[in-house]
Amino acid sequence: MIKSKMKLGNFELFWLNGGRFEMDGGAVFGVVPKVLWKKKYPCNEENFVPIVSWPILIKTPETNILIETGIGNKLTDKQKKIFRVSEDWNVLNDLTELEVKREDIDYVILTHYDFDHAGGVLTTDDSNNINLTFPNARHIIQKAEWEDVLSPTIRSINTFWPINNEALRESDKLDLREGDSEVVKGIDLILTGGHNRGHQIVKIVSEGETAYHLADLLPTHAHYNPLWIMAYDNFPLDVISQKEIYEQRVLEEDAWIIFYHDPFMTACKFDAEGNIADKMPCLG
Ligand SMILES: [Zn+2]
Image (spheres, helix red, strand yellow):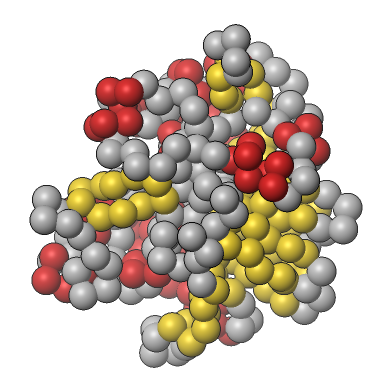
């Protein structure tokens, strides 16, 4: 089921169900004391918070672009238990609802290659073969991120799983970018680093309306304070400084912020005091 939608100029944005799971609140809010974060974001009695991975389909008049791909369908039962998956990846069914075939996706933008963003790049078919989910799409990733995916550290091997990159490596659908670049007119990528060395964000502009996908610089609306960052961030000081830069820019440009991990809000605008001034509701 489509989770949310919005119109931005003559682009249409749809949030697809790429999976729902739970994470430890301490990992999600880092050094922030629980007495503070629990006022902005709920948790259960075991301290787990609800998190989603909802890829964003952008339909422009000419192209179909997918930002992120969700957790995919390759998790084992054991992994689903560990990550407390409560809703499975349903992206292809959601696309069908929108009358978009997987062959119709022209670009897949990966802000970075953690498993909860890139797990849907490659999926298992009915015969148990692993294939590119979007066989005609160019998969856009920062070159630095891809280098790290191919040579993971003892920390990043826990999120850069070979099963999520092997078949892409062998395909001709990899589109590695260095620094800032354009996808199509109105959709630009900006290298920020921070969460990962090769983390990039997406700026979307159509007919004078603007939205930023800050990806894991701002995983949920509750992370708006630049100091409220995740324990997963590899370069925390860079996350803080990049948040300060782009949150200021969003304000100056009266832009929307769109979210990938937030089950409570898919898009919102903040005012200068950091309060939510406008928001898009989730549909389910
Ligand atoms: Zn993430």
